[in-house]
View 1 (cartoon, rainbow, N blue to C red):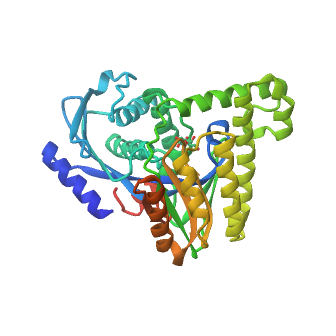
View 2 (cartoon, rainbow, N blue to C red):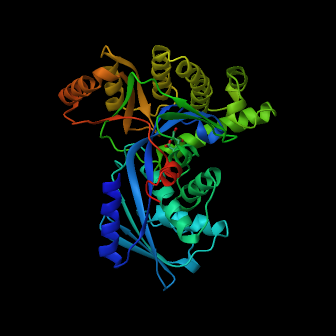
View 3 (cartoon, rainbow, N blue to C red):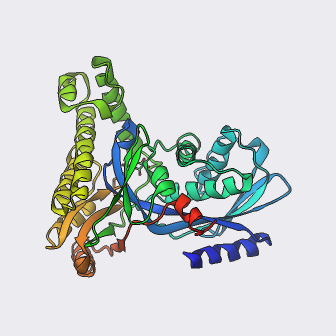
Length: 391
Ligand code: GLA
């Protein structure tokens, strides 16, 4: 990553004529636990080795100038009068983080910031959380503060919810900030308590991009969330002990079936069973039982496809091809859904062959060249800063 950092520092120097300070944040992939985060449930993501680098230097005119090295474009704001006014533009994400820090009464002077990154966009690998957390790391350096993990993640989520207007949960920002190399993170999205779980050395996590674009900020993600919340509200009304879906059982849901729409019922059923699967997946991982882990991934995929109805034909095809490979333990859609990537657990020695076969068969059936990445769990932004990574 040093190379990317140096490149970003150079770009900053060229753009603003000043030396800057670099911070980095990774992307993430979720192994299991989809759409459970915003109802207080369990998720199991890990950080992966794509990064956003944010380079910052002070300026005296009270302005915040963001330069995107990827889009080769600047966006300028007046720090003192920043309002939550999204423009449906890449700069909404970093400006949202600045705004969220101000909401916490953290005062900031003017600055120039360069953002550069290699996170695939619209692939469900959390390019937005990566930009948010990298921006927050740079801004906290600029303000001379060090926020704890919970605060950092919550603030970045707030930027996305209340400034950008995307109703995401806490998973992405939390793991992008708090992940640790060689570990997956089991996160309780209600208490924000987490476990760091080692992955067996004999396996690889292979990510396959269907190349079908996905976006959290638009339509379907929000629609699903509304259906979930409507169902949750009915259960809460009927079973007052249940505040969040996380506390509900399938019996609770059944008892309320006639009081909610058929789609709310199915969405809630996905979430209740998904929380059970994440808990079971944790056990499987602790016992290094990858067969069991893989079976849970397959069940999770079916539930996302049939109950949550957030898959698509291309993703289902990727999962089907993957499961025909002898050394693949499990495969499922990952992230918000409606396109994006699959995540696959594959025996290490077969990972390359797995990728070649998958790409060949997917291209033969769809005409699309899928991008695949053989990944390992990497450090989140806070660990990178401590290790001397970018800070
Ligand atoms: C997106 C959101 C997350 C989470 C996932 C689905 O990535 O940003 O908060 O809801 O979708 O699990």
